[in-house]
Image 1 (cartoon, one colour):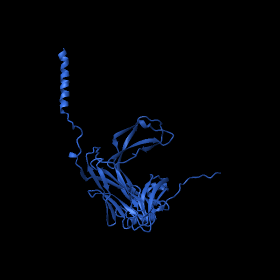
Image 2 (cartoon, rainbow, N blue to C red):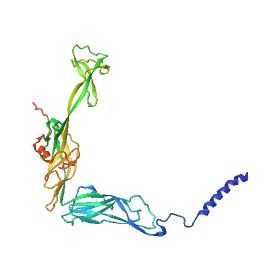
Image 3 (cartoon, rainbow, N blue to C red):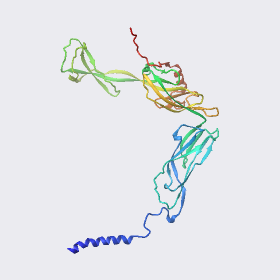
Image 4 (cartoon, rainbow, N blue to C red):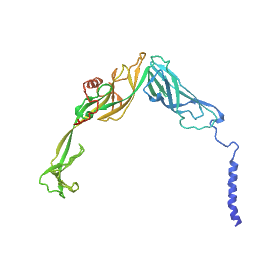
Length: 366
């Protein structure tokens, strides 16, 4: 019995001796580089933003350059990030370089290190420079921003949108003054739907009225790919009487009328924000609430107004006139939109001006 108890103990001592014989004085983490050598190299970055993605940068402001997805071997290997730059015609090109030096230090090595932001003054740049871009080591253009001389004006306002804007037959229609809202008809698409009558039988009459009228139940929506079945029921001519309970109608699918056509028209419309602006100005920021017919629509608009030393112009729809498509919040320009700028301008000038206040019914006291 004693030998049986001692047998597992011998095995345990043997395992301890085995692992002890493998131990070395130099055990521990492996060195980062063999023989403690120093290795220098270039890292890279995959993302960059200028002024957090804004459209323009004022020459008098501080430029913020943010680099993201930076690889530098490890967090403690980064030695410097050089903001190299050059000039190409009217463009200032930033091409940062990531430098690292690997030594025996052991530190965390995530795939990418935290984003890094640099600040640069631009007030001494030549007036010929109109654009700033940032590229990485692969010569990939990561971001660009227009360089302008002038000021930014931020305004918030509300425009009343009359309920007539919801009626396509009243278009084109616009609000008064500037800024204004214009809604216009783009095109018409005729549609043809097919339908057949379906016999309905009442299984429980409520009132035995003498005079009855047809009560056709048309669908609330139509499909061009399907023939709609339209039940034809009856109702008492007098509103005080009920012909049949709604739940007691039964339909006979074998008693169908002939196929008939229903014509319809789809009205394709567009809605624009229109504003007269100073010559060569541009919209730098734009947001708005949802369109509310019969109520007021809120806008927030930032406008860049150039000073006398500014050589660039726009971009804008026209030199002193801007149009923004409210369905896409995109600036209307000649080369990208289906409607020409001149045509849109003519529609805006000739459009009917809607009421600019809510019409309230009033009763005269007697």
